[in-house]
Image 1 (cartoon, rainbow, N blue to C red):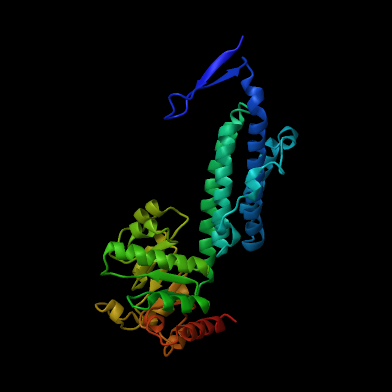
Image 2: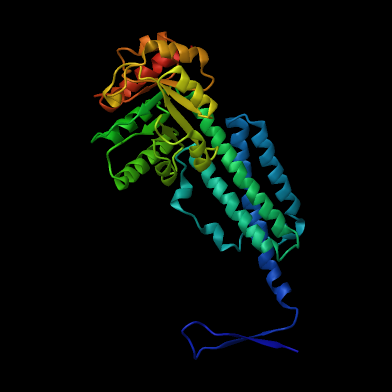
Length: 368
């Protein structure tokens, strides 16, 4: 006995299509297509994980992250049966001819990793849904693995940010300027790897626009991008973290909002503030102002003595800041600084690339 299924196209009341379906015949009809979908997405997820795994192994030398990638790949391989592989029809797949210009290039390691995490997560969502038609436990298994991939992404991106933070020795804090983007890019070309967007007086829509452009610039050059004061703005533009002053929100609250994968810095002016910031979980601290500076007009200079104290007592990365430029950087280095933050020295420089190169070379010289 046959059953009829009425398929009436939208806005086409006179065009009715009646499809005759035999009882219990639907599963055999959909099987080849479902098998191909599962095969393609298992391939996609495994390939994406392997790309991520290679960076964890050779780029980060992180055995724990490598182990998690390998576990996920092996779990997917368990589901990638000969039955599904046999349904593969690469010559007959119209999707093999489709591409997008964004797939032809990657601006940085971060962009490469992000693209492949998206690839894996999308594939696992497909596997979760179509897997329910294939095996009673496949949907649940894929859902659990998808959540593990989200955790892996947070762990990897957080680890990579912390690694780059430790390797960064010159920190540019921006100030409003008409030619800000060209100045920052010139510094990035010279090897700068850490930029903070700081602008106190602009409207929020202006801040969002400028922060977004700076974030994209930093990602192009593989640099960290930090937002001053504003946790909401940092989240809105997907920054790598936020820098908080002494009067800003507690680090614990910022951490709750930002998560552990993003960076939190804190300005400090004396040993007590330094120790408190470390105890509260700051990822790095600013030490200063070393010299009097118009950026901190109402704050007296902390001096080189505080720099020497930080050199002996800070257990996290710290940046000497405040009035530092090409004329006095060696005095700051002599007091024990291995990392410095600058503002006007680069933002107002006639040749920002040369200034950045000089500052970095002086900081590298002390570690050679």
